[in-house]
Image (cartoon, rainbow, N blue to C red):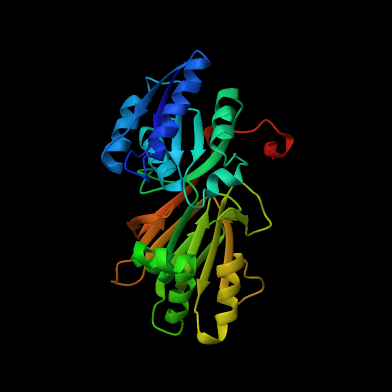
Length: 298
């Protein structure tokens, strides 16, 4: 069998390329062949993967949710998928953690060689021109995330996000948006909206339901008196019984801005397209290599 190995050669200190070489050696020992798939930017990488889909029996992606998004975007644009092996290399690796994939490099590679697969859901927007592997957000907190500099993250760590978010409470930073979903249609002043393809975020479960749907949490009409509710959401992902919170489970989410301001999304940790957008859940869309254990069959 023949595999493609996708990685960003400019990421980190060359660790991704070293991992790719180890993965290729393991394939060769298992009597398979493998080629490296790299490109100078995400757009060229997407085109290269799309052009290669008929050449391979499977793909391996090295990196975090952002790298997986490049592969997923190639899949949804092409309307075709291949069995996908994941070697986690990001900061959070939410998608990999949800499906119980090993964080250890050697274990992740051995799992791919073992070959056990299951189909899992992802999402897409822009008429299936952009994939959503793990998370889709928009609103004030997403704007903050898009603007936080790498130097600030290195200096302050992840605490920089809630600190900047707290400064925005009480300011006119909510966006009026028309939101349509299954059995739901409202116009809300959205401070922050999060849609995930799984019931976890940051590698932690944040809702009790594990249905194969989009899990949508919307914070709206935020004020200073709701500060503690916001902090609960930031640090735990949970907002129970709050009049500032709307939670939905849906296969389709339509978002139409009711303002002239441009509302940008954030997808899998990177800046995404602006609203209006329709997000759709693609059930059982991608076959991935997973551990062969009973807990992964649900």
